[in-house]
Length: 239
Image (cartoon, rainbow, N blue to C red):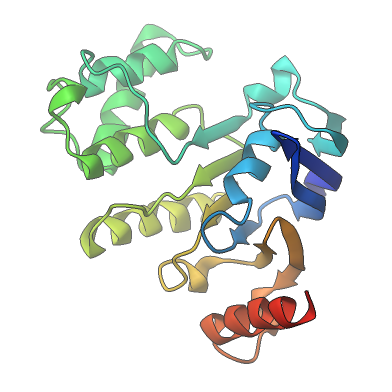
């Protein structure tokens, strides 16, 4: 069953077209990798899907419904690339604030917060203000926020950015756990090695065009790095 379908998506910014007929679909339970170089259009596409920017034309369906409904928003988790947080809240207060958007009892929410702080290794920093957190700590508390509602589909924008190998391994383990539970995961990244072995499909976007659409990772016979480079270079030569 498709949980996300993007058709003929176009987007312009300041009179310049920055997305050209973007097409792909994501099946329930897939880990879907939206891969591309910097400034390729990955984040813009995700923002269009989540209704954070308006599209010029095309269609986007989530849970088989055009545009986001209130019901579908409850099923979505989102971690942006840039974590703009309330710096005077503690980590625990930040999670509590976000958890109150969902139908938790007070007791359920507190249990959930403690579980998440433990999962992202912030149990000893939960009562410290976010302004005292390092970049990698902010990344982890935002990841915790994105899964507080046990989303059916999780959107992650560069989730490994700024993390050292230990914390990247922690994030990867969380993604594997979510995959085993059947969560659909859609994420942007240009870091190949971190997540190559947990992905089901990839699309590659380059210069605001989809150059590989919904390719099964298991069907790629060469290294993913070489496959990626070959596709990008082929597109450049043909342009």
